[in-house]
Image 1 (cartoon, one colour):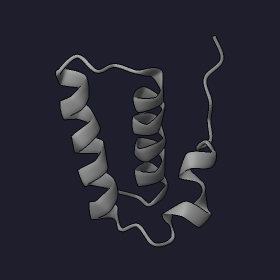
Image 2: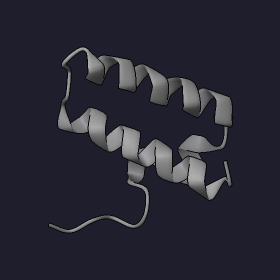
Image 3: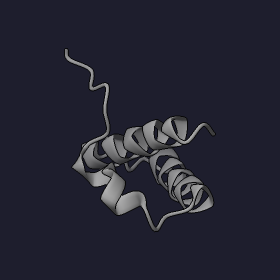
Image 4: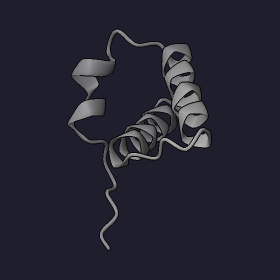
Length: 60
């Protein structure tokens, strides 16, 4: 299995310029609640990983 070390196109800098760290955290929390409810789609997991990488990049 290969692990990505960079964000996908969904979390590219262009898309995140207008999103605050608080916005990213709210989206991450929403995905966490959905996953806790049994909705574990691959796209949700990927999006959550991308958000986490972006937050790390921002030094959060």
